[in-house]
Amino acid sequence: MQDRPTAAELVQAVHEFLERDVMGAVTGRVAFHTRVALNVLATVQRELELGEAQDAAQRARLVALLLREPDATDTTVDLERELATAIRNGSLRADQSEAAVEHIRATVHEKLEVANPKYLQQ
Amino acid sequence: MAVPDPDALTSALSRILPAPIVVTDLQRVTGGASRETWLFTATHRDGSEGLVLRRDPGKNNSQTERATEYNLLAAAGDAGVAVPQVRMLLQPEDNLGDGFIMDRVDGETIARKILRDEEFAAARPLMAAQCGTILAAVHRIAIDATTGLRIEGPEKQIHQWRAALDGFGEPHAAFELGLRWMSERIPMAIGATAVVHGDFRNGNFIVGPDGIRAILDWELAHLGDPIEDLGWLCVRAWRFGNVDQPVGGFGSIPQLLDAYEAAGGRRPTDDELRFWIAMGTIKWGVICMSQAFTHLSGAVRSVELAAIGRRVAENEWDLLKILDGEW
Image 1 (cartoon, chains in turn purple, red):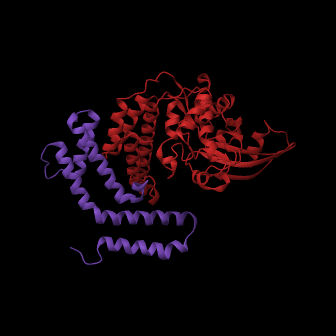
Image 2 (image 1 turned 135 degrees about the vertical axis):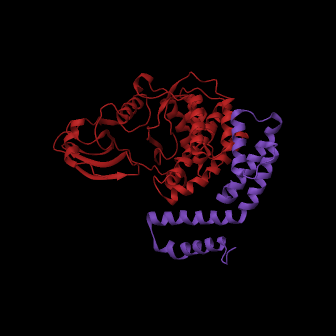
Image 3 (image 1 turned 30 degrees about the vertical axis):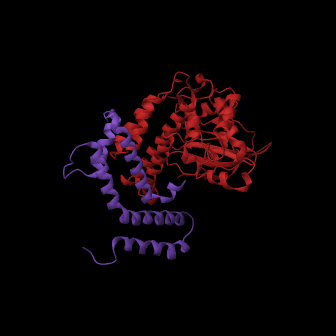
């Protein structure tokens, strides 16, 4: 447990500082990198808001796909690695391939909801 | 970064220009840690001209990457490709490092400006067909003139990107899906080996109001399937948001292929083109990952490089669209 501000609120505060005070005071390369930093902070903020629910959804989809009970030590990334390996080896069962594609599409969608939601509107 | 010695440059230029020679306006363009590009003006007995020095600083080892690039540019010019005319290969006694001198071609190279600025409004509708015509000439470059280029066919590239993904140790199921899809569709055209430019896209073109004037950045050139260049040009990342213009954000696939075929190129099937767009999309994704890992490894700490790691999902999204039948 931590006191307010929450992590998301702290990131928001730094974002506002960069946008309001720093952007106007810098030019050229530093201004460009400040713009990049603002985008990074916005990504962190979205991850703090969405990350936990996304991870749970990804994990549930992967468990259904892999047809085994995960160990408590298996992270979602571990399960995703199993899927990636199965696709490379061609060991994914034919009746799973559609569900695998749907999981991959959903996962990439979730990554973009955090990293760059505008990209999904293209 | 040391500025090239103007006296050494003047002395080297005396082999191709009439004395007296004066070098002015020497300025470096763009990044590149090991490779330098310098613009300068050489004024001599008969007038003055804009020239470019491309070099790797340090020792001149005679048989080198820059010598390969010099020979390739000369061969490309002979095949009718719009490239800057090469003027001279540096020799060890020039004390200017390993490189060459070529003509300067005026125009814009920044992709976003070419796609947005009013100055290029008349050029944009011409560019897809120009790309087709130029690529047909690239793929006609005599292979014996290109000693030093490696063969990089589709199977080798699939293997290369799988190995690269393993090197990062981060699972990318979307890329694995694309690589499996490709491994089941190795194009039938293998065997029709040609010189492949390897980075033929907006950003490596010099563009004027009249369209594409010259093709730059031949350092990724190799031998392989010529359709690779057509596919790379259609990778969604190069559209900079103009998603309805599949060719570099400025044109249509029929414009590109019609001109390519009219200039003597073999028209690819949709499946072949899609194969190479998918390959290019994964290649760009791996390049983005390697930029993020350049930061993460500590080699170059940079917020810009770090941010690129989260853009890999854009390449995955693009790849899924290509696999899904979109252009």
